Each structure stands twice: as C-alpha cells, then as structure tokens.
Length: 379
Length: 72
Image (cartoon, rainbow over all chains, first blue to last red; front, side, top):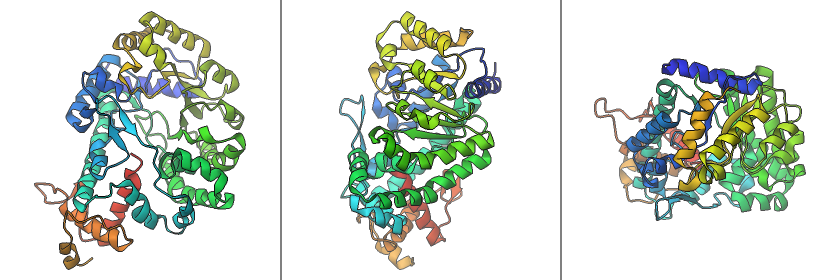
C-alpha cells in the first residue's frame, strides 16, 4: 500500500471513530513525545539537531506504523527558546526537560492587558520571559531559530502525510482564556489564587477580551476551512486548567468559552478533540448533550470504561496506560488492548494515557507487540 | 524608524522593552541582522518574505513572535 492509500484508509478509521461507525481494525494514535529519542539511542540533546530528529521520526514511524501522530518531535523548540533563557531546560543527565511554573503577568495587570495587550506583551510579559541580560543579538538568534523551527515543523507535518501516509492529530490548537492564564501568563498557583482574589467582573472582562481578540479568530479560520486533508480533527483544545476549578467555577470561567466552539462544530459537521490531563468526568454533565460524531477526548486519568458509560456520545482516545507499556509483559499489554477494543467498541482510538516522554514510559518490545496486534485484530 | 536610529543600536545592547518605540527599534535591528537567502538576498521566514521597508509591519511580525514564543 502506498502513502496515499494508507492515508485514505487511516482517514476513514478516524472519521469512523468520531462518528461511532464500526472500524475493521483499531485506529492507533501516537501520544509519544520525547520517548522516541531514547528509543533511537539518543538523549534530549538531540532536540538541537533537526536532521537527527527527522531520522528519529522516520525510524519511529517505520518501526511502529501508527495511524496518527500528536507529536513529530516538534513540541520542544529548544533552539528558539534557549537564546533568551526561556522557561524550559534539559536536565543535566539529558533525560528530561524541566519546566518551571512561571509568572509572566502579575495579578495586578489584568486591566493593563485589557487596555493594551500588545503593549503589555512586549513591555512586561516578554521581558519576564527573557533572561535579565538578554541582548538584541540573543533576540535575533531566537527569532531566526523560531522561524527555522517553523520550517522544520511544516516539513515534518507534510512528511507525515505524504511519506508516512499517516494523519496529524490536529491542525489548529486553541485554548480557552483560563487555560492561557493557567499554562502561560499566571501559572498554576497564580491562576488559582486569582479566582479568589481578583474581582470576578475583571476576570470575566479579561476572558471576554482574550477570547474575542485571540481565540475566536483562530476558531473562525479553522471552521471556515474545515478539517484539512491529512488531519484527524478540525479543532483541538487542551484541558489542563480545569484541574484547579470547582464545577461552579468551570461553569462560570471555562464552559462559556468552550461551548460555542463545540456547538459550531456540531452545526457545521466539524470535529473537536480535547486533550485532557488529569480527569474530566467530574464535568461530565456539561458534555451530555454534545451530539455523537462531534467530539473525541484523549483521556489521561479517567477510566475509559467508566467514561464510555457516563458519556456514550463522546468518542474516546487513549486507554493504554504508560505504566503497563513500561513495566508489563507484551502478552499483558496485548490482552489489555483486546479488552479495551471489545468492551468500548465503536468510537474508540487506542492511544497512550500520558505524553510518552521518559525512558521508562515504555519498552520497545511492548510497543511492537501492541502495534502489531492493532494492525491485525478484527474488532 | 530612521536609518540613524537603527545604526545606533548594537547587538550587545539590552533589548529595549519600552512600547512602542522599543519594539519598533528592536524589530528593525532584528530583521536587518537575520540571515538572508544567499541567492535572492531576501529574508524569507517560514515561506514568507519579510519586507524590510515596511517598518510597522516589522514590529507587527516581531509582536507575533513575542505572542507565540512563550507558549513553547
């Protein structure tokens, strides 16, 4: 089968999974990130060499034959972030990327953001992102590397589609305003304390402003062009900040900025995928009325069997525990995949329940066993 | 921004974080020092040619970078 035929088959597998149509085999989604580097015999410093990363990706695809990829080693553009300091660093032993919980916007700056976000971004947010001694040459190097990284990422996306014959999991990633606070501007501690300490009206004004200026145009662009060939979904969003919200806070600060996207996808026959960290079943009531065929959730800590019972209208990606891939036998892994496929049934894509990042997250033997099994097993 | 002001900036100068003059000056410095295509002499980044004569667009391009880099 050539790349074009593979892509057509894999597109059908994912379309069927979204639509709860029966698939002849289990679609397999790669949630592998930097684990690939260790599997190929390198350490994290390989992230600085795009030729090596491309070689690692090629070998990974050849060996495991995933149907769809979340990451093509394009998640960590260290060459672009390091000249300015950044918020990530490779650990001394080369086995991990360490991320600091960081504050780029102060609690007192919500109004300033609303007044002129471009000014705040340059004069405060970006200044805090940079190391104190950052020079214009550092900035020039970072900008150059940023765009070169963009070229590398574009090349890999195209290669995935045209040479691997595989899907990219998402084309447009957009997050709600609260996620932006949680992940980037205010950090975990800052964003959760703001929910109690910052005037509620001001918080909501910030979220409306952010949504209108940054999120909505992105969503409109994605919806207007529809799901692109070679991609598994129209819009993807991340669920991380929900972990610090109560149900009432979710209803007030999160849901109003997510629901319109889901509704619009349903109206236009498009799809939305949610990449969820931790659990989301405690917010299940909000998703009960999403029509079948619109939404897929990549699960981390939610039990997939329980999720299917609670939200039978939402397709599931995930199910395969990293703990099992890293520490069980090939037979145990394969038996568990069979149980997942048989019990969850349609509307299911097999993936890993973590961003597979570290050396011990998986063994090659186990992943080969699972990859071979999903190619053959008739659901 | 004027040519004189651009010449006055040096690579080891700290990034000027005032707004909007700082970002305009920084943008002009950055895009005048980025590696050019050896054949055409143009600056082509991720498939887009940067027009060095359009000062306001340079600042806008740098602003887009600023609002993206901290996501990564």
